[in-house]
Length: 156
Ligand code: HEC
Ligand code: HEC
Image (cartoon, rainbow, N blue to C red; front, side, top):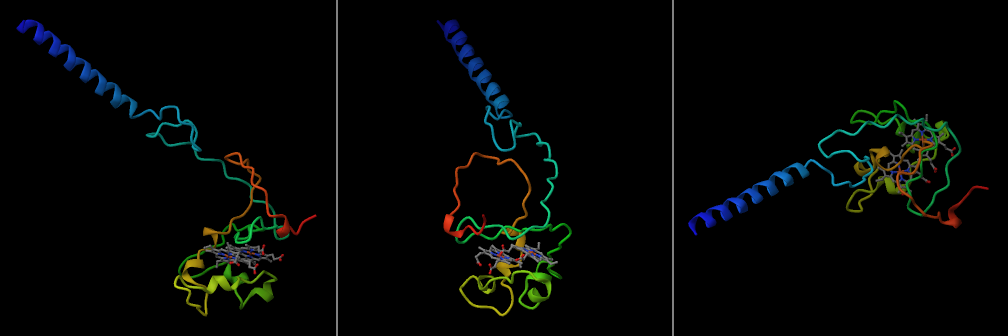
């Protein structure tokens, strides 16, 4: 009887060990989940995307919904934004927009978090490219059936 218990116990322990070993291996497997970074193991680095060609300078692009940050219709390569300078404001600030022919930043860009109106661009609107982005001829990453608000279209 003792012998039988011993054998049974060994079998159970071996099974438990095998089970954890298999689980440990599975940790490295993404389980076939297809994410935007492709079918890449979680522990691997995915391949960097090739740089996209930003579209040439063009007319302002129609907005798709009311509070959309307008898309940037021009190149922005080497336009630096840091504590010392903001290249975007050299054209888009209220001081400079007339000279450069650019749209001036709207009133919302002067509003601080608590609704206080500042006399210069608000820190939360300082890093322009956080919200405004350039355009490239890129395939959408996910299927999307969004339809722009017709009333806002200023094209064709
Ligand atoms: C050399 C001047 C210049 C610089 C620098 C510049 N822009 Fe512009 N930007 C323009 C001009 C000119 C337009 C087009 C205005 C027009 O045709 O009505 C424009 C258009 C835009 C628009 C579209 C506005 C709209 O109503 O659709 C956005 C958004 C924009 N720029 C953001 C930026 C951002 C963000 C940066 C910095 C990364 C930047 N710009 C740097 C000159 C500049
Ligand atoms: C937190 C997001 C955010 C940041 C950061 C931001 N913007 Fe905007 N911007 C918007 C939104 C949203 C709109 C459209 C609604 C509005 O005017 O607030 C807009 C509108 C604009 C417009 C069009 C204004 C008009 O009268 O049609 C310009 C030009 C612009 N932004 C330039 C800039 C520049 C330059 C910076 C950096 C100094 C900047 N934005 C930073 C969100 C942002």
